[in-house]
Image (cartoon, rainbow over all chains, first blue to last red):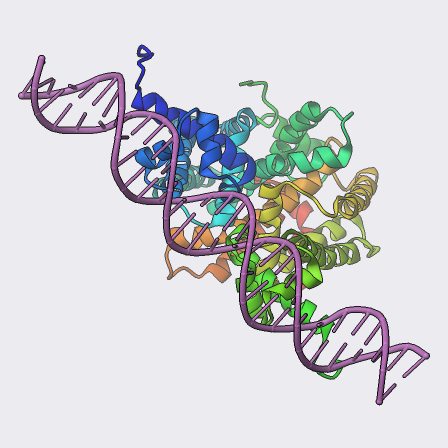
Length: 222
Length: 222
DNA sequence: GCCTTAACTGGCCGGCCGGTCGATAAATTA
DNA sequence: TAATTTATCGACCGGCCGGCCAGTTAAGGC
């Protein structure tokens, strides 16, 4: 870290970004006055305009900054050279851990859906392309059902992961305080892996034995 | 329909509710001034306060009104006395059609996640309870895997359905205008049914034959 | 036909909020 | 060290928006 100077524009920028990210995600951008951001960041409101131009540009920069990290994680994931099934498995796990570790990511995702705007669609597009490619490989190798659209597969597992965290708070309210939400979360992760790879339908014992050979319930932990 | 009187409080209320629902869902509650709602509804701003008290109460009433319909549809679904697998199948289809037919429902769902508040958790809770019960029956009958938490099953399929519509607009932008999104949507529905019941993993021909007997891809249409 | 009730109107106000401006002082450069 | 740049501040402005109020007119009970 650089030494603390009495004037430190970079630190100021960062302070504003951090404060705004907290408040925006907690209450929604339009509910948060810039004055409040300034107070939390320990600076004057004018500085926000000095460094970012407008409130909207500030919000955009926050989104961009956060999604950079998001895409970095996702890209790392897809560039490992494992087999398709293992890759899918690890990818789901990693996505789950990513959202689990930082509540902000979930809020960002939620806001994307109500705002509709997409600052970095291109990068996301790229991720989808790579993912689809990997699944096609798996289909050619006879590991993944050929009658499924690869895009459906990706969207299905993204959905199952994200929705857990989106509805987590609501679920807590529903179940009351005494429930062990952590255990339930792990169980949910295991379950969606099972559903995703093998479906909910009961299978005969010989079928079950066959699928045990593949990596359905691994022990890898983050 | 009652005859149009020069003063018709019910019609006025309804006009305000409809106008506000449109604008709120399109731009977000905080982006829409009450004056705009009034103009669209063909009344004065004061009438909004006269009938609803405040802007926030208006928004709450809109949410409540819409979710009533939502719960009605869902409840009808779960009260049919079919077998667990058939019920699950029909339930997924119906949920899909419900969101497909009215874009507003999707927007409402999205807003729930960013606002966090829940005006009618009790009713939702009830739906979950019934759903869980049905799945337990299926597990006892050996139709549904016993190692899965029923809640996970419900959440997984709700997720796969809702997320499609939440990301539909973004997907259109990603793919460009020329794509046949309708066909893709139907394919996605088929695919998540397949994934949900049988998983993405390729199965041997004997296994596949066994699962064909069960209702994986039905022809029922809305 | 009166009288109470309530739907409805136009106008207005108080506050808040995003953004600007001029001034100041700390960094940077020459 | 002088000159330039720029980070920072406090004060302020113009507009908008939610809500209120005093008044008007229709509906409904008696």
